Length: 228
Picture 1 (cartoon, rainbow, N blue to C red):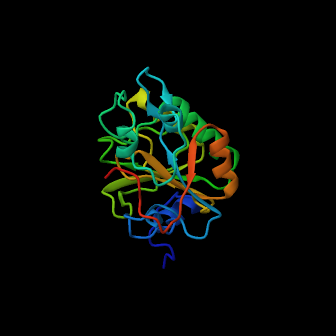
Picture 2: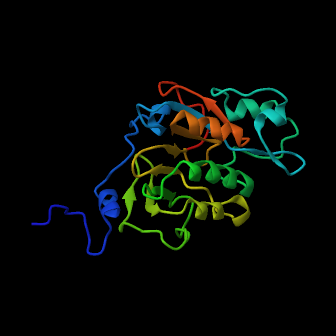
Picture 3: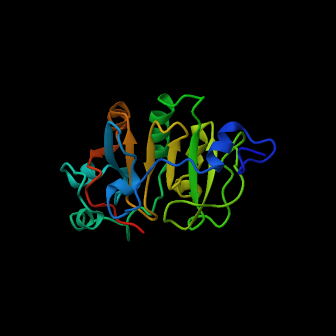
């Protein structure tokens, strides 16, 4: 008898693991940051998606406001402090190409080729799942991702294909990423203003060094991100 009932002929062992439901261990309470992050990691942070400034540039919130932002700041509060802001709502999970490149550059430096990344692409965002590049290994079937609606999961051996999933290409960034070995994770509510990161402190610090706002938070905090 097949000891891996979820496997299909020709699947890699990693794809079989994924098809059997290996997940990051997020909690079921999405009202708290623990619902978007893994337990037991060195760092947990909220990574703000850069905002489109009135002059068309995508900038950090601290640059736009002229003051530091903190992990508990809500998008609606920040927007009220920015009367010239030409944006009707949170970034909705759209990421500009520079932000995507920064994010991928940091994560690629600390991710082993032997530890592929699981990419969750929301079917609410995309009627057709975009082509995430050659080498991607769809594990087959459609998956329910936590308590979100349907999302497709892919194994992505090359993180750089994610730089195609940007605002300029009219494509939302994935709603979640994590390594199959559970080294780090990044997840966001739908139509959100930020991601939640969990993993090594060195990645949190590298995100800051890259110019992104990676703001320390606690898994027990209520989620300040505004989205669905």
